[in-house]
Length: 412
Image 1 (tube, rainbow, N blue to C red):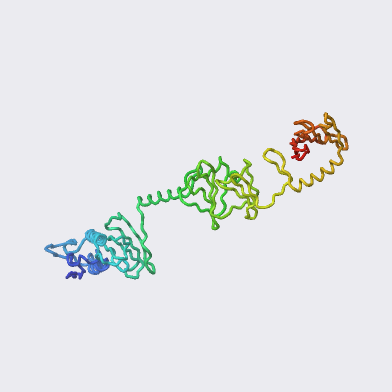
Image 2 (tube, helix red, strand yellow; image 1 turned 180 degrees about the vertical axis):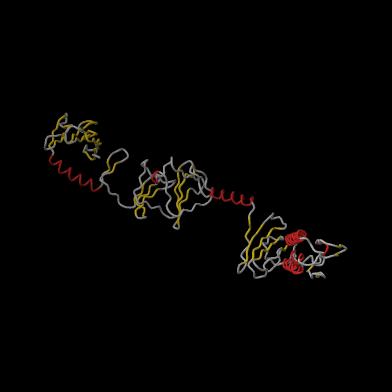
């Protein structure tokens, strides 16, 4: 327990009883120095008085030293004061003021060891140092440093301050942690971008705005390659639906959509000049209604077929009813104007060759009877000529049939 010295009334602490007390410079040093200063005389004051004849066994002209009167020399006093200050600092810096239940939010001690809920947490103990401004109280502006005591989290340090309330603990990273974060940031930056020379971008790519390509925006095989070998193909999608484009096998390229139809705003043109169904009948439609169905062995039209002319597989023309009638009418008119020239009269008086001449004298057609025995010829070969009368346009070979009386009954 502290007490005062009997002569100068100096304040003195008990090293054992008071070892837990905080060192107070004002009460333990400054007040004692003032008391000493008030009690001692200056050199001039001593010289102005009669010399002491006898002190502590000394006689005659006596020269006193500090030890003769129980006083301390300035150097000794300074040494003790320095030691006391250093001891106080060592005590304050290395001794826990309050145990593990101390609340960092309200403590006014310089140093506590605690795992209180208001510490940085992580289920470990923390060395917490508090630095006050001006005075120590639960409402003073102050700062705290927390250093991890133990635990698998490794060495950690947090800081925070109190100014009209506590802010959150902020971790101070060590060099290894900073390097780890730097490495992660570098990796993320690389993963989120591609070098100029190209690379692999993993994950989704979201673009706000227009994607501009080199060469004026033209996608050419030697500039931009979009490669996807999955079964889904390369998908282009929005809120309305999706289109996938890719070769799904070595047989060909595939274009699929989840919508019911494809729309083209221009006429589709086949470079190979062909369109085919996959493995079944092919339907050609108009306004979603089938007009022509191409089957394995036939083509079915759902409506009338109109065309200037038709041809059979052997190249012979198939005339329409209307066309045939028009030509028949025209032929009747033309034939009525044709002139005949006969030759090749046989023994029965039948001319085997008949030529039909146009009004301008050019040959229109020539009929030649052959086969069989006159007068029952079996074949009539009719050759038609172009307007020049020399160029053959077509030749019809017409079989002739007779009845039992020898009358001609068929020229079909």
